[in-house]
Length: 498
Image 1: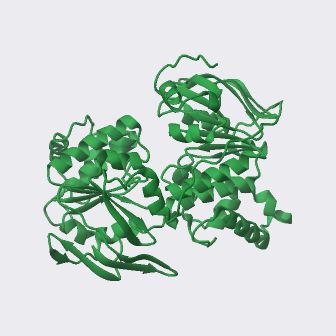
Image 2: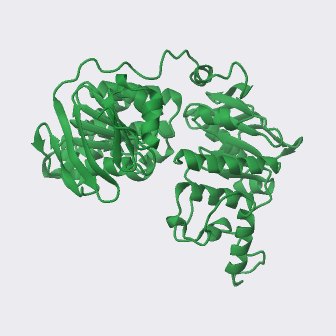
Image 3: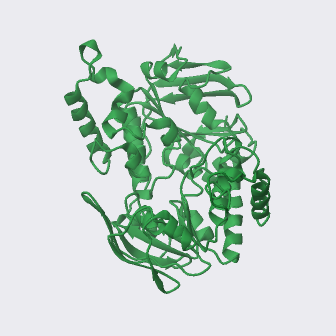
């Protein structure tokens, strides 16, 4: 791809962009949210038409104006959170739109034949997957594999993977990596979009960094200039002093307390305190119970036993709306399905959790006050583009997360629970979100729940690790090591600090 331009009203997303892909290589594409990498891929995939530039495949110029053009040239794309029909089986989703080779509207679909073809495709890879199951019953990595099988079921030589591991566990990621290795051995070239630099070093042959719609560097993964800090600085265009802000200096009174909380078959006997001015970090992988814990703390799931106290008083909330009234707010891990209404504008989403703040008599919204408040909030969060009428679904991942956080700030809570606050967020946006969380903790109590061990270690004043529904570590963070926290999150631990 050479000299690729693509502009939208008020934004030049690609400015003479360049990108090359070699046969049988895994090429990582990096950049902060809004750098142009997703636009480049959508041009390659036929979702967008380029304004200028050339695309050459095996030395021959090709035209890609629509997704079918890309597929005809052997280019397949698996987007982050691949869209499927949940009630359809895995094999039905793989061959969706290609159920029969015959023309006409009244041909019967040979489901037995489709299932056999899908299982023969699956047999090429070291994956145990029941393709007869409805997609709604499949796990995250299984859905990702179905999406990849759908892509390679056509005659395909280039596979684009957009943030493929954003919702996968470490074990599931390794399964995906095995699949990528086998595709590569079969001659497939892979474009791998990710924010996780450790995956770049583990899997990529080369990496390209985009910034402001341009290619600013292409390096081999083992290049001496490809260390994490150098790449982060290439992505941002400036020096980075540090990603994590300084820890809290002094904690105040206890604001939030969990006492013997349990949720049947998910977690048991979880107790902790959170003080004003501090961040409590809770580390746990999928299956540890941390996701369910966040939902109990916000009234989404009813606890089986135990008690929650806020400022010394028993909390009686049994729903999120009641939790918000009592001063508790959850910024959920899955922002798309749990944290936002994507087809509504930014101002609508941000003000949603505290309409009382902008409501006049008879329940009418004071629109002028709402827009002034949201404008100030957007400026403080540096939401880009700074357009409160923009639909949230059209924003980059990092800016969507800022909108969800902004909704929490508008709620003016006493206790904030952040679940996976930086999933799918670039290094620049991460630093901004971390600073925001730390500033927020100065006047409130903050619980940060994450499957990223380094994030918990870098942000928290006190750390809890959970494994299979039980606390295996509870200690001031400055009395822990990163390896110790990780160890206690993947084993029973020794509880020596409790």
